[in-house]
Image 1 (cartoon, rainbow, N blue to C red):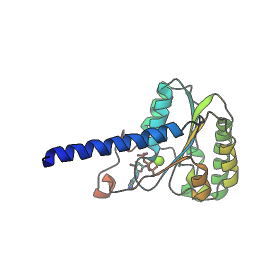
Image 2 (spheres, rainbow, N blue to C red):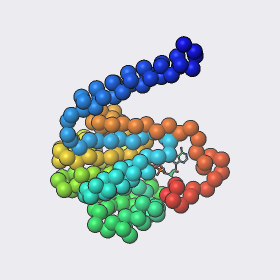
Image 3 (spheres, rainbow, N blue to C red):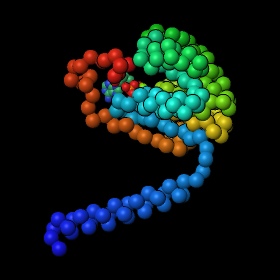
Image 4 (cartoon, rainbow, N blue to C red):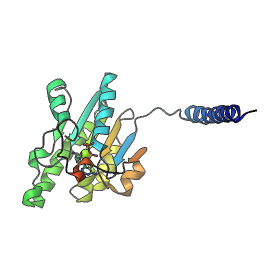
Length: 203
Ligand code: ATP
Ligand code: MG
C-alpha cells in the first residue's frame, strides 16, 4: 500500500471514530429545557454573540426580551435595528440613568435596581423563549446588585426560557449556574493599532 492510500485509510478510520463519539453525545443529550449561556472574556464578540442568538430565536418566531446594563446613552446598530424593526420586543437600557462619570454610587445603584426590576419581569414571563442580559456582570462586580438575587431569579425562570448573559468577570456563582460558558480570548483588536471604532462592527 502506498503512502497516499495509507493516509486515506487512516483519515477514514479517524472520521468514523469521531462520528461515533459525536453520535453517542447526541444520543445522550435528551433533556429538553432552556439553558443559561454566559459569554465572557476580554476578546471582542460577547454582545454580538448574544444578538446572534436573538436573531436565531426570532427566526423561529420565538418571543425574546432584552436588557442592557450599559453606561451612558451610547448608540448601537442592534438598538437601532430593534427599535425600527422589532418595536414589540421588551427592551430596557440602563443608559441615561447611569452616572459613572459623576461617581454617584447611590444614583448608579438606583439605576441598576430599576433596570434589574425590568429584567425580573422578563425572567418571570413564560412567553419569552430567550432573554438577553447584556453586560450584567459589571453590576455584580461593582456590587450594585445583589448576586444571590440575580442567581435566584435566573434559576427560577420558566423551564423553556433560555438566558444569555454577557460581560467580563461575573464570579464563580454565575459560572456554576450557567450551562454553557464561553470565554472569548483577545488575540488582538484593531483599536490597539489605532483604528477607530466602526459603526456596524464595533457598535
Ligand atoms: P462586541 O459588542 O463587539 O461583541 P464585546 O461585547 O465583546 O464586543 P465589550 O467589552 O462589551 O465587548 O465592549 C464593546 C466595545 O469594545 C466594542 O466596540 C468592541 O469592539 C470593543 N472591544 C471589545 N473587546 C475589545 C478589546 N479586547 N480591545 C479593545 N476594544 C474591544
Ligand atoms: Mg459587550
